[in-house]
Amino acid sequence: MNQRLAAVTECLLVAPAALFMAALWLRFIAAPQHVGFVEALIAWYAGRSWALWLLLVGLPLAALAGGAAVLWPQLAQIRANAAALVVGAASARQRSAPPACWR
Image (tube, one colour):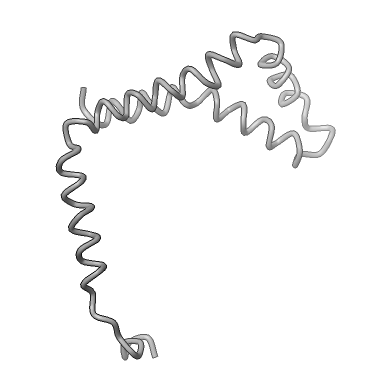
């Protein structure tokens, strides 16, 4: 599976949980007359215990596992790049004054 397809799939797996979290957030910031749909959505999730576990826990965990599976073959390259970044940051020369273009 290529990385773009994996990214789209993971976004779709996380979407129900993101929708629920957005509804919770909107419930607190929206005017009382505009929260009808939001309250209905929250009540739908709250009325179904399977929805809470599957849509809010199971699908995001599946997205995490899918992302880890996609990145696993590239783990050595990711570690090498991280090591190069750490070495580069540690060996960077310290400047006593900002560059002339910042003045």
